[in-house]
Image 1 (cartoon, rainbow, N blue to C red):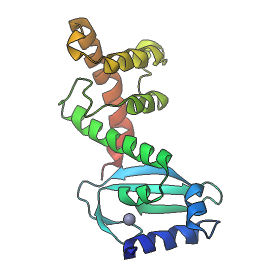
Image 2: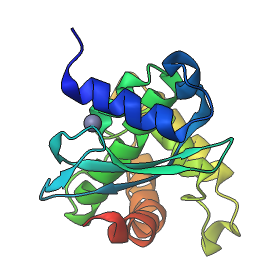
Image 3: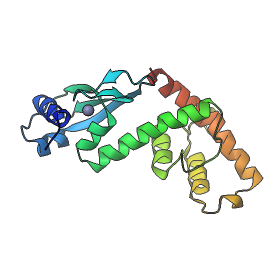
Length: 183
Ligand SMILES: [Zn+2]
């Protein structure tokens, strides 16, 4: 039995889609934006209350948007690409809070993933005036350090560079692009 929430989701999405078939309708959508509501006071388009991440999704065929939609409803689309993007976007908010509190200035796997580093790079987070707005070397360095199985093999010099990149590139980037999306 499908819950009322799932029925609401399916009806709302299909009404805004070109296709009337759920399995086809889900392919028409992309994640357009995501905000974080720390008070969890909003209600998803399915009717479920207290969602934390407020996604805006956009229909790539007709331009319709739906907002707000929560993480668990994004998963109901059953699309790996959307699930992965949602996980990265939520990881970005966790990273924002961590760097904002100066907590984790290391490449710990509870905050970082290869996908998240790639997303940061694609968004230009490693581009600064110090590298002439070409962050590829810093990105590759960070990826290499993250991929090290034995983190104790990271030298003091490398560790300093990791902290410098996090402080001088990643932190300002997150504050500039995400801080206003925390409501
Ligand atoms: Zn929902």
